[in-house]
Structure formats: C-alpha cells, structure tokens
Image 1 (cartoon, rainbow over the protein chains, first blue to last red):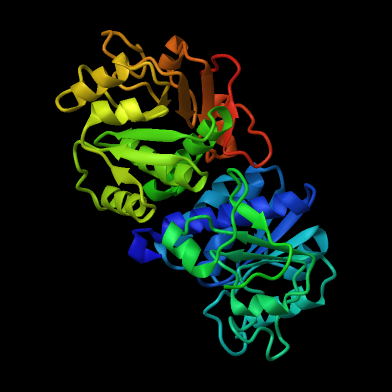
Image 2 (image 1 turned 60 degrees about the horizontal axis):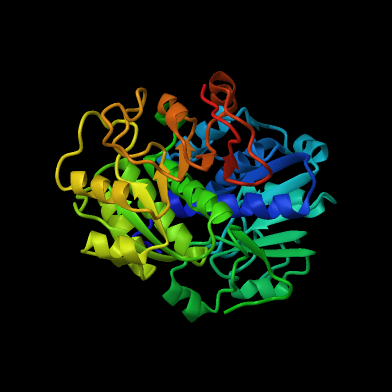
Length: 210
Length: 210
C-alpha cells in the first residue's frame, strides 16, 4: 500500500475501525478481551479496541509482550486514555469476556507460535467463547491455512484489504471484509467486492478470494 | 490530542472520514469540488475527498498552493491513485460542481486571507452551490466568527472534536460533529454529544458548544 502514499498509521486506523464495525454488526454490547501480538496484527487490534470502546463495549487487553515501537506505544497509550484495562491473567480474562479478539499473528506468520504466544493460541483454542480473528486466524499460514493444526478456529474472520487464500478454510459464522482504502486499480485487479454506503466493512456471504 | 498519543495521520484520517460521512448523510451522489488550503484543514479535505470517492461521488480538487510537507504530498498522491483530478480553473470547476467543500482555513486562521486564497474565498462566497465547511467556515475567527465579513456562509458545517465558539454564528441547514476520537475524560470535560452506533459523525440539531 505504501506505493499509493499511505502511512502505516492511516492503514492501521482504517483496518482497526473496520474490525470494530464488523464486530458491532454481529455481536451485542458486552465484554471484549483483545489479545495483542507483537506486530501489525496487534496494532490493528489496539485500534479496534479503542473504536469498540467508543461504540459502547467494555474492553480489556492482553498484551504479553510490550511492543517497543513508538507506533504501538502510542496506540497503547490511546487505549489507556480510553480507560481500557490491561489484564495479566489470560484464563480469568477469557472466562470473564463475552468475546475474544484474536489480534496475535497476521499474514506474515510461518511455522509454530513461540512462547508466550503458544499459550495464548492454546487458550483461544480451548475456550467456547466466540473468537474474532483479524485478517488471518492466528497460527494459520496465509496460503495453506491451519496446516499444522495449531491455529485458531474463529467464529468471525475480518479479512483486510482482500481475503487471503487461507480464508478458504474458514468455517465460522461471519466473514467480513474491511480496510476500505484500496484505490480503483487495485479493487479491479483483486476483484474486491463493493462496500455498502459509507460502511467500512462488508459481509461476505461466501468465500471470495481474488 | 497529542497528549493522548495520537499522530496527526490518525486524527486527520478520522476527521476526514467524518466529513465524508456527514456529506453522504445529507447530499445525493454528484460532483464535488474540494478546495484545499495550506494547512491541516486542507489535509482533512484531502482525506475527505478520498473517502467520498469510495462512497461513489465524483471528486475534483482545487489546490492552488502545493503543500510541501510529506504528509500532504502523500495525501495528494493517494487522491491521484483514486483518479481524483486536480483542476486549474476555479470558476469553471465551481460551475461544474454540485457541491463545494471548503477545506481552506481552520481554527488557527486570523485576520484576512492572503493571495491566492482571497480569490478562493471570494469565489466560494459568490456561488449559489452548497458549501460544506470543515471545522470552521474559512475566513472566520475561531471565537468571533465572521467578524470582518469576508468569510464563507456554508450550507453545512462539520465541526471537528467539538464545535468552536464561532459555530454560534452558523446559519446553514446542516451542522454535524465529527472526529470521534476524544477519550472519555475529554468527552465529559467538553460536553461532547453522543454518537449513534458506529457512526463517525452526529447531526447537531441546535448549536451545542462546550
């Protein structure tokens, strides 16, 4: 996207907003725990958490590795200013949540999750709370999906910009597309579906992958 | 807003999006000319133009002074990637537009507009096309309003974060609030009205200024 002049701040803001909007379309107000990974997927999750708090949900964050980049520190600072609590005990936090957002790993993930994220994936796999995955279910390979069987099985997947090949293996109830920033040439090239009105997300009724 | 850890890219993205959403709530699809000033107000206008093009409007830009900062060059580059044309002849561009967005001067403007922006304000004052002003009608003083009588009389005003004192003098048909990023303490302190659902803007039925 950088060839179109976008900054990471802009893309992350629109991506996170679209995740929050997708969640608000399908789940009633309640308690949401957002699990934050070490990279851009985690950044999207921090933005989504802030917008969800604006939409009236009760948010908490599980962020086992504190990101060092200024961008993430600032996103975390914004969440703190929105009175979003960070939690230490993942098991308790999941048990108290109505929904869990999986913003741990994204499309660049390969292989097996390392500590402490292996435990986060394990906890999300073993709960019966609905999981919402950001762009890619954590632990999945962007093309091969849950090849090693250690990935998440989310109830909702919010694909960003365009669904990745692995989305073919998504078996949950709600598949949305978000990240409404692709210019016309890219929309055409990737066959990105149309968004309704001013919405930042669109529900995909069946698997649609460029 | 910087004390809450926001970057200018983030704030401008949400501000511009809220302007685009406000316009889409009140005006049917058509041709929109966006007049871009030399500062942050112009940046908000560039973001709004891009989102309006996503929403199905036909956009063009009048940008008499090319901004030098990377942020603005990038925003302009994004507009170019969205096939938004820059126009040279303001009079012709206004005559061909259904709506004109005034993103020339914002809350830091004082005194009288200098060339070439004096001509832009004059052209916007003398057209009967509906004008949408971003945050402050251009030429107005943030507190005293159109004290020198050289300002714009917009049909719509989209106040950002919170209405400024000068909004008391707004006589147009549509007053909206946008820029949904104020944390709870600021919302309380400034008496910022509630936004509906996931909307990035809210219509203000009467003047509401903190």
